[in-house]
Image (cartoon, rainbow, N blue to C red):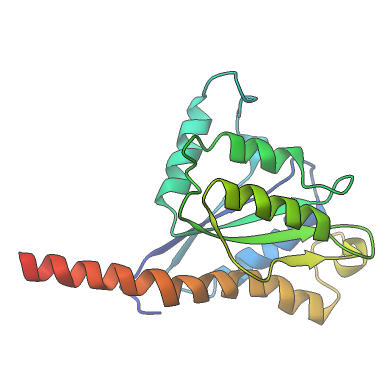
Length: 197
């Protein structure tokens, strides 16, 4: 990636539980993004926002969230698996992105964690379906962390090198997509504008 580019990534934490394993996994993704000088990352923590339930109007926080997502080059959505599905928190975030959704046309990488041995596969399948329905470009290769309590220490240290590589891969997968499919279009547009000036 060239230094002139400013790739804006929004990563959404899909839980409001303090000290969650989802936040530990997302912190690892954020650390990977931090290796790239031309990437600006903003982590959205819904615990810090007033997001209304559907049908209850909008809030200033919801409007700011929509603007952040609209201005993002790409997104990471993270979720724990609860009762075989994704969290109500991540659904509330999606519900507050408007219609048409601010996710429409945006590349989205998915990350899920679960305490069980099969991981967050069911929740990620459902989340993929919803994101696709609202027009997001859901990237292949969602990352599911099984037995997450064994993969991370309480302080967030990852204990499994394979898990670390896969979780960090959420960031590189998204950046690879942006580099291949979005940056060339932006460069071409800039060239056309230059020629027209």
